[in-house]
Image (cartoon, rainbow, N blue to C red):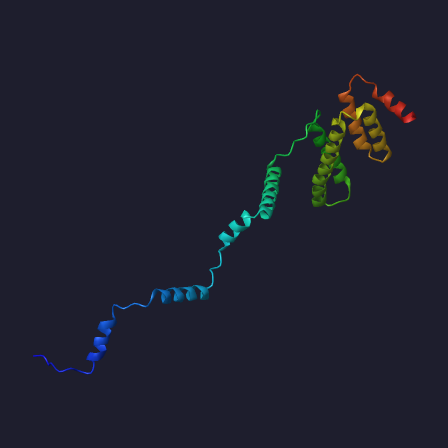
Amino acid sequence: MTDARQTPEDPVIKHVREQHNAEPPAHLDAFILKAAHREVSAPKPGLWQRWLDACRKPRWQVAFASLAGVALMLSLVQRAPEPQPQFDFAPAAKPAASMARKQAPEAQSLAAPAPMAEMAAPMQSQSNRADEAKLSKRAAAPANGLDEQLREVLRLRESGQSKVADTLFNQLHKRYPNADLDARLKQIQQN
């Protein structure tokens, strides 16, 4: 049972049914698309894209290549092993121990309390090691020659470092057993 009478909605439905296949003209679609593209801003390139664009410019290529070269050189220089000095003469360990023993009674004979004497002995042995290191460097330098080393002995004696001078002189005796070092030392003193 259907009612055949027309309702007021029928003309609207009829119009929609007639127009549902109709489309706007093509020139209107193109105009709308162009206006939409103009209004939308271009997307900003990301960091990676800006980096690649900068790398493509010759001015920046030189700058980046120079920076990479400097970084490479620094990494190679820092990782290179340091050359170890080679001496033809190495001081024996016994003189340091004997000097420390000689100086230990001197330190104990002073009117210092026992803890102070104990603290002074390592410091004196460190100074002896430093003196011996200086002596080994002086004695090991072959370019100085015997006369230069004897002049060094004289200079040390004049400056009041007689123990260091005597140690250097003894090392020279060991190094040059056939040379008359006393006569040469006197000869250098006269000149």
